[in-house]
Length: 201
Image 1 (cartoon, rainbow, N blue to C red):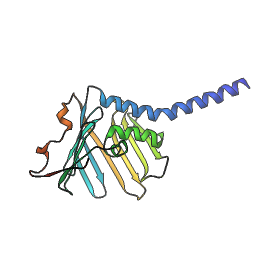
Image 2 (image 1 turned 90 degrees about the vertical axis):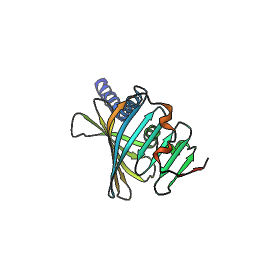
Image 3 (image 1 turned 30 degrees about the horizontal axis):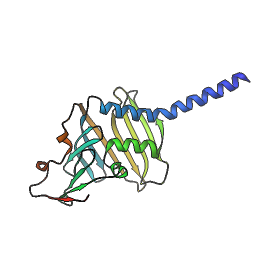
Image 4 (image 1 turned 135 degrees about the vertical axis):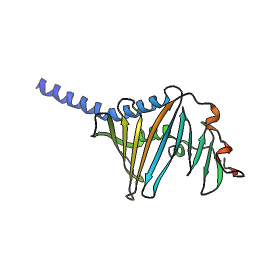
């Protein structure tokens, strides 16, 4: 009987460790991104409509995203967003929930709180895969995160939506360096001359 009880507790402990492992990997990824002060990287987003690409810079809770489709700066309090659709820059003070849509660090915390996670089988030993499914009804049906085992950095995120659309985000060319504060504040040279700036705060 004692052996059976020990075996059951061993199995439970193993399952608990497996359940915690995906969240731990996300924590490692956040720590790896924050190592050295800040990080820059290239990214591409592929959908059924095509592929767009750009650069991202992150440091602490600050970030900047630059592409032909959108430009966004966030200094930890204020966000400036430009889109070719509106042809204007909107200034906002986003809430925590709004930041989940744009800030990679906030998104990581959101995934941990709002999704069930489990480790999935990887095609290579160098890749750590997490499968996430929402705890509550969400536009996302399944989210797959692919990490580099050696660096803990996120390489690919695949969003499978309930409307059957698929978004694949690939991140490459990570570079760690301390970034000046100006990196995360609006740079008018990045938008067309004469662009209207609208303060929505």
